[in-house]
Length: 396
Image 1 (tube, rainbow, N blue to C red):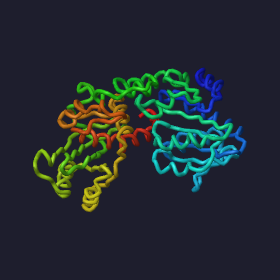
Image 2 (cartoon, one colour):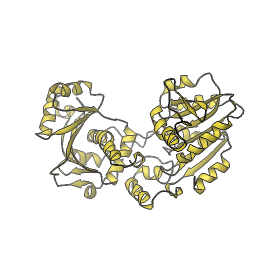
Image 3 (tube, rainbow, N blue to C red):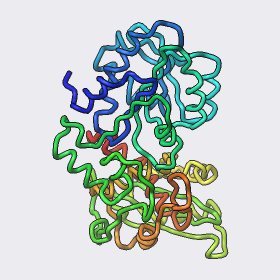
Image 4 (cartoon, rainbow, N blue to C red):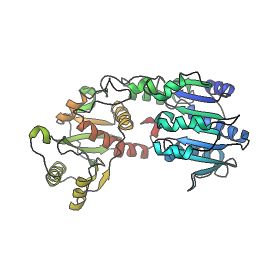
């Protein structure tokens, strides 16, 4: 199969203890590893375990094993079994998630001959620290990839250390096999955000300033959609504000048509679940709402909605940073617009900022409840719809 000059450079130099590719999304970092991993496995002598680590087993399956299976066949790349093992080219490999501290116990006590790491910046640091002590065979090797993060990230500090590391840095333009139109669209979608620096230019960049590159002239509308599929997203609060958004989806575009916003603290009155349910009914009107997406921590309110029997409820995907990335891409890609009557959303877009005092990526938790319910809608509903339309997950 053809390789880019950058990929060929990696193949010529990846003979260190740590071999790391960092940089832009869709730049060819992971694709190369579908060939690198089998070569490493065939060189293993059996004096230690073989480990594959990803953010979760699910992401490891989606990002690594499934594409390898398509390339090399199910006979050579198996399925992850109930005991977390998978057969690859006749070698027994352990496939584990690395996002939680309790994964550390699964790495204790054994030497690792080879380890592959996917999405390293999403791991729990303690998992990585344990991994370092487990690569104790004379021929131990690690290959891995990640997108850049905050320059204060623990993994960036490791990359800047004097360990035996071969590191490559990729920009999106290092992949000559992408269509120019796709690259141009992706650049537009991340323009003006920290994700442009990270996912396009491949830089370790501090998140600062406003979270979203929101332009009222581009991202708002005063037109009401006449047809479409209706959804409602909810960030539930008792003392904190409760924010609900009514969405109409047509193909690849959604409009936030209307909203409800109530702050128990500012109004000096805390509403009950039943009162909020009546607000939900009023916001929906007589529209056939297909799904209501709710903050998963709002257990009592979810129960109330289900008890009334009108709406189908889904717990929201509430990953903050991943959701922010998705909202950013959808704003810039023209997939979501906010109706001008949604005053609280417009106010929050103009003030929702990164916390410059935090050592990691973290928005300031203040006046962010409409931002949260918009994130729930984009990351739970709109993301799935776009993938179903054929738009690849990495694009959003």
